[in-house]
Figure 1 (cartoon, helix red, strand yellow):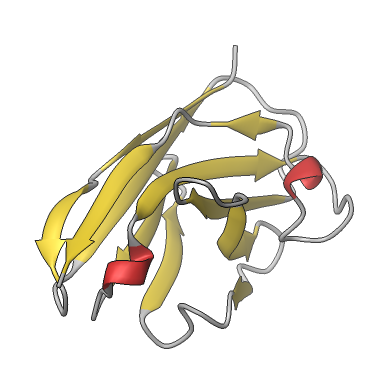
Figure 2: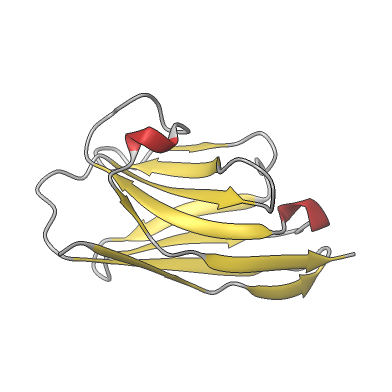
Length: 125
């Protein structure tokens, strides 16, 4: 059974940093990409960043570009999101997700077959 378990969320002041982790377990025959999404209350879930398994290339949402870094440690089967210079508008539940194929694009929720339960990030001004 495939499981994704996030950790590392918390409450920080604006300008602070957090590092989110997502541990992936279980057998997955095909792993195309791993991504972070976030969802604020009353808003759609949006893609934050993605890393592609084949070449480790990355893409970011414009709202976090230059402030966030996605990475993965294959030995630990763990995905990370380093978030710096956090802003109040970064407040949301953050989810990691795994895609088995290209699907409809990296920021399309329907591309991802597996999701974690989320970790809350709260940034105060």
